[in-house]
Length: 196
Image (cartoon, rainbow, N blue to C red; front, side):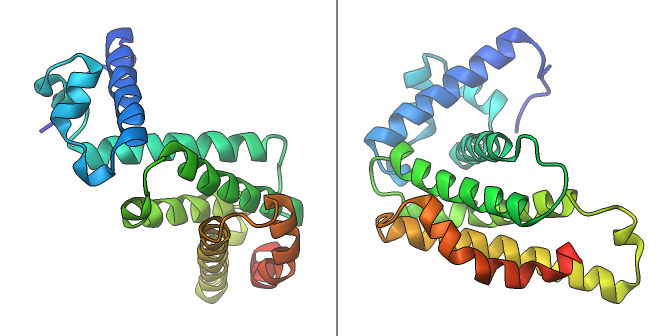
């Protein structure tokens, strides 16, 4: 059970950063399965109780690390985008490719075990990002139109995630930019409901 803490307290921020940095260095050396809370706490030079004051378990620290990384990449890619259009979707897609490539770098050891841990959260975050660009009045339309918008956002988020995942697993044989450019006609076919 986590202890209620002041998230703005510099000591809390510093300790969380120590724990996340310790985890980041361990994931470079070991498989995720073999990393223990004790390993993370020892590397961060804190005790296990301190770890548990900040994170429920190693899965939560992994998720925090991955989501922070993902959102940093996406925010950088989306800087200046105000509306959902082909360019915005392409930027999100490139961000997802950047994330997958960065994940391979972050986890020098095999990262196949991490897929199931974060895949759903990333797809949901992509969907939320897409929907955040939709005019709020459009979301007040009929239930059928809402269904189409929601379905299109799910298809796009899953499609971009899946394509980027396969591109990365296949060894990034072409640049992310070339891959996204070649894939965009298929992606945009699924985006029609969001862009109309």
